[in-house]
Amino acid sequence: MPRATIQRMTGYNSRRLRMPTRSPVLFIVFNRPDVTAKVFDAIRAARPAKLYVSADGPRRNRPDEDTRCREVREIASKVDWPCELRTKFNDDNLGCKEGVVGGLNWFFEHEEEGIILEDDCVPTPDFFRFCDTLLSRYRHDSRVRLISGTNLQHGQRRGDASYYFSRLSHIWGWASWRRTWRDYNKNLSQFSADEIESAILDCFPEPLIAAKWKEIAIALQLNKIDTWDYQLAIAGLLSGSVSAIPNTNLISNIGFGANATHTLDAGSRNANLQVGTLEAEITHPRHFVPTLAADMYTLNTDFAIEQAKRRAAQQRHWLRRFKRWLRS
Image 1 (cartoon, rainbow, N blue to C red):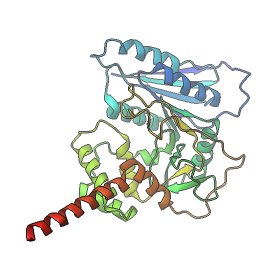
Image 2 (image 1 turned 90 degrees about the vertical axis):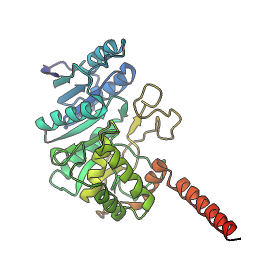
Image 3 (image 1 turned 30 degrees about the vertical axis):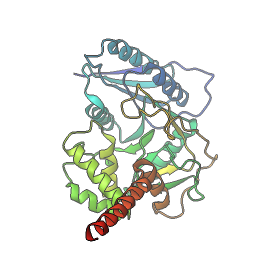
Image 4 (image 1 turned 60 degrees about the vertical axis):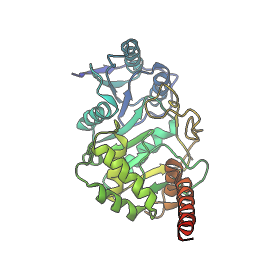
């Protein structure tokens, strides 16, 4: 069973003069002290008035993991600014789906809105300002479901505002509302795979993208993938709502590599992304329309759509040649 605690910290470090973030923060951690310390330093600089720390338990078949998990929990709890600290520490290991979902359920039971950071997603100071501003602006606008700090456009700017709207849900540093999380279903039991495929075709006019998402949905429904984030993305795609993505990247994922669970490729172009800064005044898009070109760029990168098209074209070419040979 998880152990939940609440502590009030009243210490103050006068060296930090930056305006503290207004939003409560959920920090999701596990077993990596090095990356946890870097993200916690960024949270400390933001000085949220409320910090929730959710930690999954060690795996019993990993002898050294118990020690590393204890070290991570100690790092993530070293609050030295005026803050209400709440912790939820699992005794057992629940995994990437149940562990994270349990932490998010706990957070949104207590908060109407807030910022979510995992242990390898290092935010810039502007990330917190961005989330504070948009959480307030779209608090009662159900067209917006999520605010992301990650930009995966690799230097391409989309529009002339500080951010653009997207159908996709980037969760390397994000913020949202209880109203969004209320619709979350970890098993996607509210949708059939065919419904998912059809709805995604309405969003993206590319059958290979819809087929890929359908394949992922079936695997999730059969519990073959131990993760939580695809479900959030699919629910968003089917809801018709959008997320807000900054036009400059505000999060660097430093967790790629052998010690990661899913982001194993240290050479990925999305690993350790450079970050930028927002202008002093955040400007908003004039039109409430998702940017299809940006989403297609991301999906083509993630799903290697162009490569799949070339393979399919080669297969059709050789099939035609084979049929001609048969006829001759």
